[in-house]
Figure 1 (cartoon, rainbow, N blue to C red):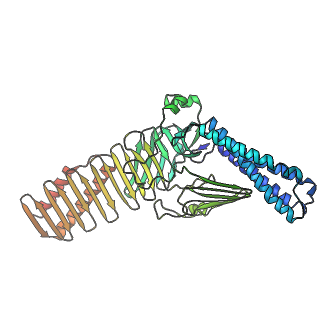
Figure 2: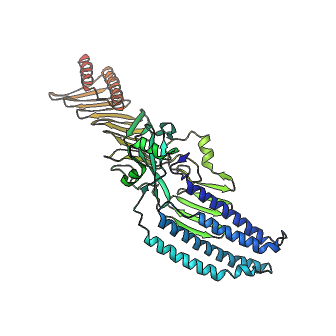
Figure 3: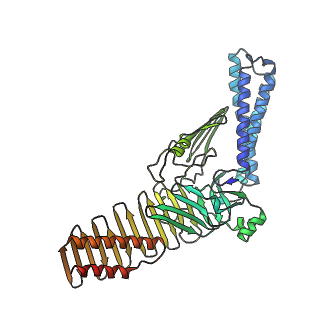
Length: 481
């Protein structure tokens, strides 16, 4: 099973192997420091040689191979240079520790310092030369492995459910070694739970997704051809990735998932990573990961601790609330509710999305926005706006607004206002005003029922029935005339 957004691929396996090897190297250094207590002084050279060898092996496994041969060679040389620097710093620190212990490092170790310096300089320069020769990466790109995802592997984001309409092939979208999302070669559907009931929107493929951790199985060439009608090579050549936000989309500040920069510090036993998505600090077997708002994981050996895991199981959390420490999709292989995601169509301005500001979608002439207990929806030129205190419907021929005690109807023929027991009617032949509790009650009830029916029509994609509204309103007015 592969999960888009979690990099469950060969690169993840090698990174974990490199991390494990680094932990073993750290433990060997600790054993060497305590060699006198453990009666291992005769094996001082062997312990250090094995530890430094594991450092080089761990760095080699961190080679990035997903961006072409030249960039892979540059990554390999850069990691060799980094390994030399780490070992040189370790020799300096361990020599100082040995002096405190009235001992010295084995001569066979210290004699390698000039060689390590030369190798570090040579591989560093070679890495720089190789990266200068490599073709420049221009933004996010879609590349393998191809993945098949089915509608049964739908994802629940709080009050929104996202899935593909049928079995579809997708390609991960990567940038700077990170998976940002996926190109889905099939229709993507989202069902939004709104205050007025569920609303389903669908956009045709190919669809660009960001922040949606789809899961699926690796596809072979036959499956790719069956699902898309094209070969994988042809798809890779033709596919262009556009991660810009749709016009009118509610992520005005940009999409958090597009983190293209990373700062790294590697010291003996200490590794620090800083990106716009958060920070990661590893000290031996202890690994701490924090997000931009303070949320994070603490890993000690095979154990992981995170308060969000407990909160999600214990509380009936809502989807849109004030941004909290458990809102983002965290690292460490854990799937938590993402507070920001986007699926956009390749043609037109269709999209399905959600962020801490609410949910927003536009598809096939329809539009939707939901925030907390309020929503706005339109199908063509008909639509409505709902809040807990007021419901308004509209079309090119009318507007209707109702609350618990008031109602206002505007049409081309007349305007009607009901407030308390007062009813005001304005038409071409003049205005009339009357105080009638019975008339006001009947009109308010009628207009409220009409507004709810018009909402239902919009949500079902049907045109509003205005003639019936006008006839019934006139009948109530004549009844009390």
